[in-house]
Length: 114
Image (cartoon, rainbow, N blue to C red; front, side, top):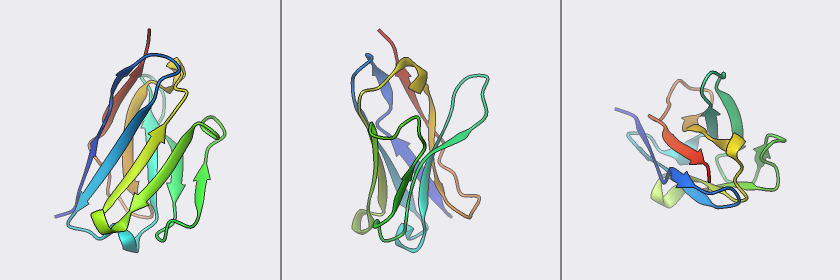
């Protein structure tokens, strides 16, 4: 049974930082490209960043470019999203996903507010 468990979300002030983790079980993430998505209230889910299976290639959407960093530790079967310079508009539930599959995590709430 494949499980993706996100952690590290929370409440942070504008300009602050958070690091999300996505721990996988039942699947070896080293075999897959991975992605982070987010869904804000009343909006559609959107991709935030992705990383190739070997970690050598990353992609970021324009709205997080330069502020967020995606990384992976295949030995720990875990994918990360470092989020810096957070803005109120980054408030959303963040999900990790095995790309080209239907495997999603349960989501982690990130709230950016003063």
